[in-house]
Structure formats: C-alpha cells, structure tokens
Length: 339
Ligand SMILES: NC(=O)c1ccc[n+]([C@@H]2O[C@H](COP(=O)([O-])OP(=O)(O)OC[C@H]3O[C@@H](n4cnc5c(N)ncnc54)[C@H](OP(=O)(O)O)[C@@H]3O)[C@@H](O)[C@H]2O)c1
Image (cartoon, rainbow, N blue to C red; front, side, top):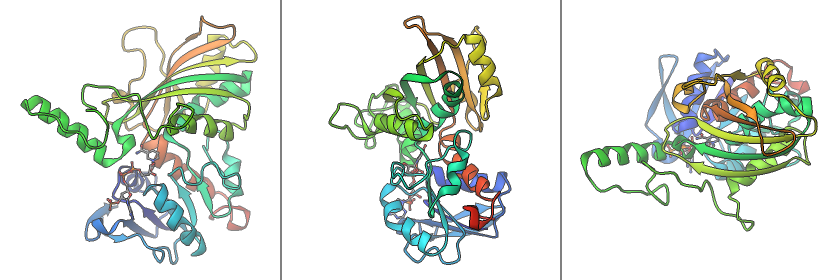
C-alpha cells in the first residue's frame, strides 16, 4: 500500500507512524505530510528517514490509503482531494463523523460499516471509542437505556502542544517560577478543568455532545440517552471514564463480568483491593480497553457502574484508524476493501 499521513508531526501522527511499523502494515511508500512549518523535518519509519512535505491538494497522487490527523479544517479541505486521487481516507477528526453517508467505525462494534464507504471513513472521538468498546457487549446482552459518564481526559488529547504545556508547568512549579498557560484557560498542572472543546447552547460542550451522537450512531442505538461531563486532568496519556448505565433487563455484576471477559478489545481488570483497577499511567501503551470497579449501581433498578481506561492516542485514535485500514485489507476494492 502507498500510504500518506496528513498530520504526521502531531501526537496522533507519531503513533500512526509507530503502529504502521509495529503492526507490519504492508507499506510500499510512506508520504508524511504536515503544515509548511514542518517542511524540512525528518521522521523515522523502519529505520529510514523520511522528509516531511507540505499538505496540499496535490499530495495524494498514487496514494492508496490516506490517514488524516491534522484537524477538522484540514480534513474538510484536503480529504476530498485525496479521494479524488483514488485514496481511501480514514479521518481522525470530527469533520465527517455525523454525516449519514459516512461510516463511523469501531472495528470491535460495527466492522461491516467500514465497507460501506464512498472514499471516507470517520474515526470516532477518543472518549466515545473506549466507551462503546466496553458498553456495546452489555448493550447487545441487556439493552442499554441510559448512560451517565464523567471523563478524566489526558492532555495528549489536545495534541503535542498541550503535552509541552503540562511538562513546562511542572518544571516551572518545581523551580519555583510562575506558571504560564496558553492552551487551556487555567493552569492544568495540579488542577482539573471541567471543559473540553467549545461550549454549546444547551450548556454541554461539543466533546460531551460528541459522546451522545457518536455513541448512538456506532451502536445503532438512536434512543439511548447519554449525559456526559468531560474533564481535562493533568495526565499525559490515556483517558479514564466513570460510567453508569441503566439496562432494559437486569444484568448482574457476574453476568456483566462474564460478557466483558469475552468481549473483543476488552480486558477486565477488577479486583476489589488496592491497585486492583486500571489507571491511565499503568495502561498507557496498551491496545486494550480496560474495565475495572465493576459494581451494581445501587441508586437505580437495573444499573451498573464501572471505570473504563484506554490509551486514547492508540485505541482512541491511531490504533482504531489502523484497525479500520486492516479491515479494508481483508476485502477487494470492488467490495469496499483495499486489497
Ligand atoms: N490527540 C488525541 O488523543 C486525539 C484523539 C482522537 C482524535 N484526534 C484528532 O486527531 C487530529 C490530530 O490531533 P493531534 O492530537 O495529533 O494534534 P497535534 O499534535 O496538534 O498535531 C496536529 C497535526 O496537524 C498538522 N497541521 C496543523 N495545521 C496544519 C495545516 N494548516 N496544514 C497541514 N497540517 C497541519 C500539524 O503539523 P505541524 O506540526 O506542521 O503544525 C500536526 O502534524 C485532530 O483532528 C484531533 O481532533 C486526536
């Protein structure tokens, strides 16, 4: 495959390059694209230095697969050019996710949707991906009616510059210097900020409403009720979520645990003792979605509560995108695949 990465110099781009190598994706040529600022930089793939080129409408000649991670504006502007040039686009941004003609895919949940594309496949929001990987198996078993979720999102979810901002603030704090902040409205070091993405008219943020709309689309559950509170925390990598669900049919903790233990992409990490649960630091770098603190929600009839953690740069972005591309390799071009 001739593969292009638009946004190769970013946080997701770095993991895309790493995963193409680690998962032995069949790459015959890798084109690394970013803004004009990055032209001249080199990045390493399989021991070879590759020069970064500027993302333009002419970047995709001969490309089979274009992985986009350069923000929604760039996806809207350049993804159509990639499709015109004959590439299949897997897009990490929010640009196309809610378009009815564009599949929104989590391979563990709705793999068949990937083959129904017209050139573009959308990768869901990171917070949504890990939630549906954990919840869809329970939904299939007992019908989820309502989800209440609070997120604890790492700074790498905002991109490479936010990682630097947290590092700098920690250094300045230790050195006794005043802290500066540009990316977030408050200092993120030693703080939590209940605000991810822009505010909407209903009082929720865009990130919170992505969790509502994307969950319904991916799980084909248009009536499921979702209320999310998205919070940024001073963690470098991996998002955590406290989730409560109400189901049509009562699911015991034992039954839910048995279902999750067999679920694709899920690891149950749930011992009721100190350290018997996943934390973002412990699971960073893993491909799996971890479920811990599984218990009955004692505030409602048919309720369960749990703690779900995943590496959002991997499962929430680069890995999910690559899993979609790997799915496409299983079918010929005439059937929506890439083979
Ligand atoms: N971070 C996550 O956990 C995560 C999870 C799910 C989805 N996403 C989505 O993935 C995308 C990338 O996120 P990120 O966290 O990797 O951001 P990032 O670290 O800020 O990287 C942004 C990338 O986009 C490139 N870019 C920016 N402006 C450009 C322009 N005008 N023309 C060409 N390239 C341009 C940057 O290139 P330069 O280095 O040259 O500026 C860089 O390669 C976003 O749409 C984000 O919403 C991120």
